[in-house]
Length: 278
Image 1 (cartoon, rainbow, N blue to C red):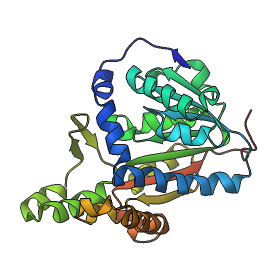
Image 2 (spheres, rainbow, N blue to C red; image 1 turned 120 degrees about the horizontal axis):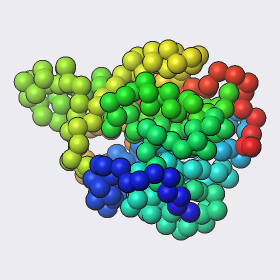
Image 3 (cartoon, rainbow, N blue to C red; image 1 turned 90 degrees about the vertical axis):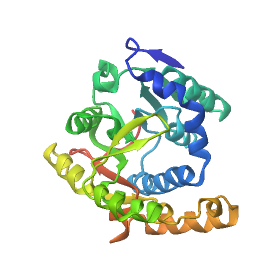
């Protein structure tokens, strides 16, 4: 079901036009690893909580890659995104998976959530891949925390700035390119023709502490994948299976997580531990 809570937001068109390319990326080895490793990390925290069905808010959740996985596990998920074609794809995806009754698609600007989404009633909030597209990091994290009830879980995925120079070295073998990458704060993506802002786990952890969060758990996503130059080999099923096992095993390990292409932070909002869906 799609609910429209705001007028169309400028910029949504670029995401809608990239739906097909985005789905191709998701099906590529690096895209599959992004979801597999994130799901493994999140499952560890959800399992430890002993929670029953949760109320989940997926900020900038696009075509439902995370939402449908959670809905298939019995949780009730609201996707908040301003790109209508992405949301329509998410609705079809949920229907195909038989979980349409547990997924709501809300067409809204994450920076101006309607009251029913910002009211602090959610058990789990996802902020996966949203920070690279916003200039207001603290404001976005504050919005995510504001939607959580006390004791609720927040999951953040962002591009890791520490990975850029290493990735450039492997991919270009050009010292001049790598030198520029040392101070780069953005990376261009052809997928949506955008400059993506990169962050570090240290910066985001500091911002979350400033917003009142306690312990922040840090994981890396694609610790080794982006430094293996043979992209064709990664598509071999047997090789991919081995690579996925490696990536899941390395996600939380020092020092490897610090140079992963993506950083994954999981923390609880201060307050009583979440017990279950409301």
